[in-house]
Image (cartoon, rainbow, N blue to C red; front, side, top):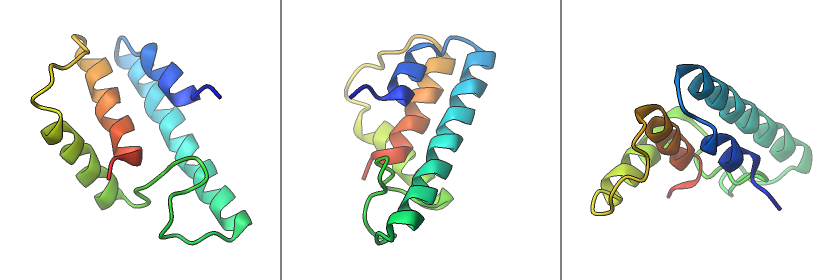
Length: 95
């Protein structure tokens, strides 16, 4: 199954597409929260859409950890808008 956020990430090239990506990420989080409520799953488990980090501090900490853990690897994105989108997407599921 294709990951719409990963596909959207590949289209990030400038401020406009970055903002669209952030909006899609926010919508994905909201849908994850709704689905989790409907299913009655534990808030401690990953959400149905793969959200590991369900609040802002966990999300941002995970994004920072991903950057720090991946510093030994070269950044694949030369475009800073794309790189920022990668970092935010990492905050979704990096643990």
